[in-house]
Image (cartoon, rainbow, N blue to C red; front, side):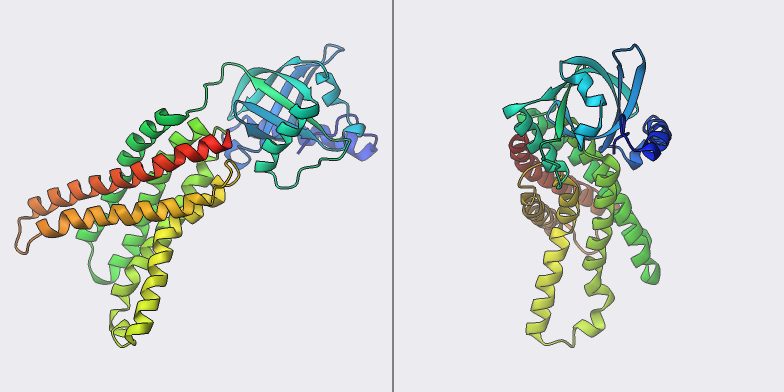
Length: 342
């Protein structure tokens, strides 16, 4: 969204400054997460000396921002950057120094490609001007094996801590209270995992919304727990089904369980990387391997009549191995996804 500076329409002249002020205040407040990742504020000194603050829609392209001025013939603000000029950008509640210039030729085409990854509809007519903002003092996005190492460490800890919540709830709850309590615990596990993942992802993909990623992961975790609990809650009915029907339902539920988190996260990730659909498959494989490692480690060691402390230690180690397995698999593929987006 852009303030229509220089518009010839009289209503736009009166309303645009108010809209701009509201958006600028919103982007500088704690409530900025509502629009974070899509809107920023440009601040620059015009030729006459006046300081201009302009909220605009942007897409991040590596260490740059791309702003498209649709209907450029009816606007003036972008003309200030026909030659490279200093600019300040309000991002994530902080002002960042930079410089901006109107992109032309091949640079314009490349910028539009980056913009199109975030916004499906790109105004590419002759009156559209692309501005690339080169931010100074911005940390270089995390890439390569440094990204993998950070991901494995943080995500392993996050999943391990998150998994401890439903594991504890499962031990403490019984009967009718177990299902709602486990679903709530699953939401906590998903939120903790999502927060850890987003903490690393935002260092690689700065435009990614932490709030959306956490919400998607938590919601998918609840769905996964709901699917996983279905056989135990409907056990008396399921046992009467034909074996073929039982096998089909089990396969479908298993697929939903394994793909739930990856699919939810793909909805966020697809705005930032190419071929983001691979994330669905790799997370499914990662969780399948992680659960296999967990069961393969714990089941032979858990024995009837075993001391509670021993069972807890076995479960803790198994959970840590599961978390590390999923983190390693997803981290390795994430490295290639981010490279493709560069």
